[in-house]
Length: 319
Image (cartoon, rainbow, N blue to C red; front, side):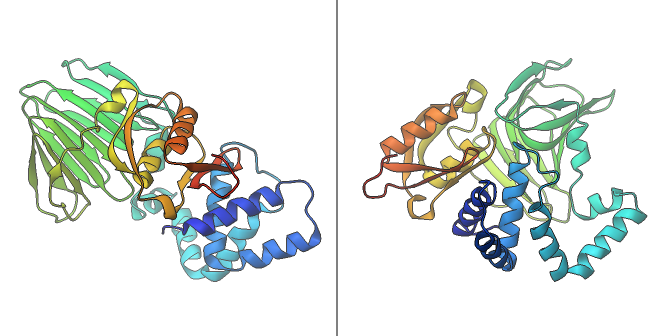
């Protein structure tokens, strides 16, 4: 469930207050009252989740509060999931939720946030693995098999007698001929961009099948394949360490840039429709933010060191 931008920003502001070391009883009560709204409690959990990558929260007296509030509001479903997890050792729970995070943790190949890697396989296939990605490789005498669990992969496949099969959470992709394509695992969908050759798309459910040709981009879920679109011009640029924006909406640009840096990076809805043009180095996302803010006359709001937003330039302030 997506969270409103303003609610997320309020949660980050409350987090800064509660971590300031000078919290009054009035502040504590106001924070507790604010958390009583379910959406606020979910936003607080999101901030906590992100903060956990930067500072230890063990022993923090505030961390369990949002979880406890949500727990009281939906005890039946949560208790059922807990029971299922205990009975099935967690495996059935992961499958029921459509996610198996342990596969990402134990994957053959992984990249950290901001890291891009490339290598060549035994059959001559060239792979590029984008930021915060994880995949497995399993070749045998009959099939060249890849599994993408998280993130994005660009692959240059040579023609060979064995088909190449790439699985994602939503289905499988297959090609027998030489091809070059990228696959991006999103939340609940897979995005395929074909730069050369042809790739067969087969959703995991009863979603039909389709062959995506050179120059086509296809997004599919486990049960549905969306109409194809032309491939985005900059979809391969990350392999060279560049984020290419060709008249891209600011909110889309920020969402893409956020993949290459830790923490939260957001965009105020009031400026989301501004357009970004240019080639930006992914190795220095701070510099990219400064350039974009200056070019579009925006303000960089840092509520926390790891919680950053691009917002309208307010009177009397600078970016």
